[in-house]
Figure 1 (cartoon, helix red, strand yellow):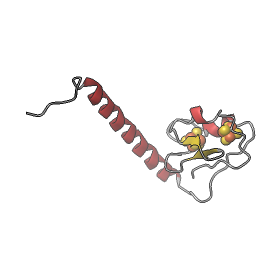
Figure 2 (spheres, rainbow, N blue to C red):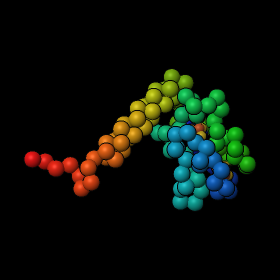
Figure 3 (cartoon, helix red, strand yellow):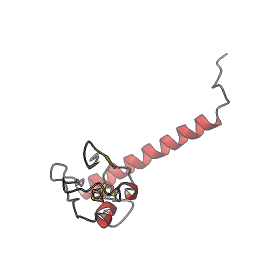
Figure 4 (cartoon, rainbow, N blue to C red):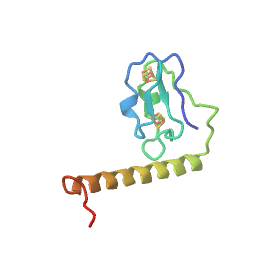
Length: 104
Ligand code: SF4
Ligand code: SF4
């Protein structure tokens, strides 16, 4: 399952940098979790890191996004592959000559 942040959130900013998947961001009024990116920290840590640090314990599992352990692992692999692609693209851009590539 993905986790979710309830309206008890006090916007303390502590959880956002702890997420290994960059799944947490500021929403309209409180922080939110992107269920497409939350793996319950599977693949990175034994326990959900956001839950560990939240001072008001407002990050329960989200019953609307139920997933098995296998599905979470597949999501983790997909996110890792995406991250590797983004790094490769960034490196290629950095290595390109100033002014961009010319076509002849
Ligand atoms: S459980 Fe882990 S992956 Fe999910 S939002 Fe929290 S820190 Fe991020
Ligand atoms: S750690 Fe808890 S209270 Fe703080 S921003 Fe995250 S969800 Fe909100």
